[in-house]
Length: 155
Image (cartoon, rainbow, N blue to C red; front, side):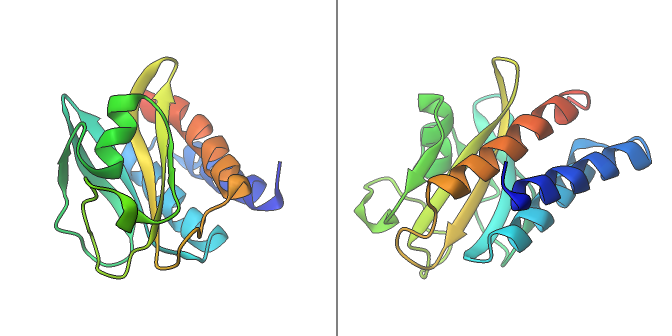
């Protein structure tokens, strides 16, 4: 495990131990720590799956008009529809991309699960092409896996 992943996971564990937390309080720790660990990300947020729609949770970065995203739409909705993380090197190559910012060029979406159930996702945007590599995906995957068990208690 990378030192970045260990740092983020330690911060998440510390927040969970301090007091009973809800998923958005813990999510705030996750997005702040990931934004620090992956400085190439211009926006880092969590979307929670509510029925057939993703609803914006905590985020770091500029405000977005995409507070609700239908499953199947954009990179975030596609991740849920396909039940698979998404690593997009250049969003301009996608037909169904939902532009949160004109400057975004790449995106990483990692599903948050409790067992087989998708609770939501961690979404990162960057303003450079191919900003997220395999090591970044592994880091966010490790965080999402740890966070899923904690977040499930609040659902």
